[in-house]
Length: 274
Image (cartoon, rainbow, N blue to C red; front, side, top):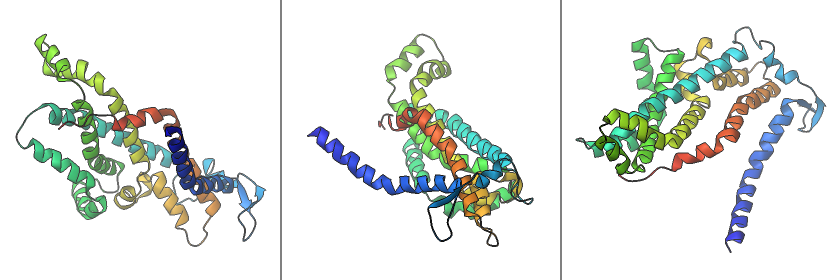
């Protein structure tokens, strides 16, 4: 019975996923071919749509490699900031009994559920005041701050799953609280930290709204806004080029998922104690 139910579930998931797979397959085919006029089947095979790899598409736009570097810096910096603050804040919420602890826990859930777009005007004004508008650093700080509630909540669950006895044994042996955290507790939550690092990197890599609104200049452009600029050219739209850039944009995400899918699954493996 269990085998039949698993097969039924797999069949349902395959049926739902088939249209998405077909669209991705056609996007890949269209990126290396030119369809017939008014059709969708490939007529000729060519690599002209991938010319952005070795030449600049437009003098007004930066090189694709500069944009890719910006995207990597944006995603990696966001992931590192989220993890650095989450592992310390989550430990305090999990292990320390301080006033208004429940208020902070409830606030984390509210901040995570709060729609980002409603804060965009306030964030714009703050960045203007700080002189960080239209800069990659400003967008990194904003994205990291918005991802922090999720990261802290996830890491708190992993800290909650670590038995108190491990920490108490280290304290009784004369180690400081910081040394116990670094040498005994932190190794226990490494799977969650790895999952959060990858998840935050992917969240930064796929971000579109924040770079579009807060860093519209060419110097801070990322791949998501670069694609938007390509398709927004009403005078000479090149859909083949757009699809090729889309495949190029998706390749690192696919590679990360294939290499680290087990670590990504660990993000829901933490405890749930309050």
